[in-house]
Image 1: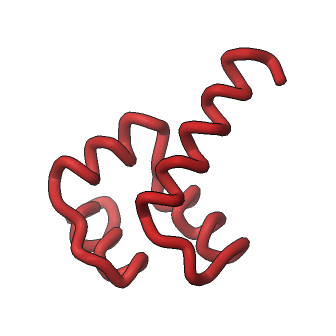
Image 2: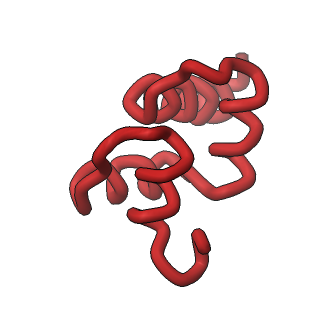
Length: 66
């Protein structure tokens, strides 16, 4: 489903309305279907915006080396 329509897949998976801007923010920080599944397994109630922030933090730590 993610490959065919990632916006709809994220909406269904995170149980919230996802628009194109939120999707591009997710994709911009390396968001993927695998990462969405990982985050929801770690914290089932996590909203997409929190997942985006977590992915941003991971990118920042990777770039800075910490």
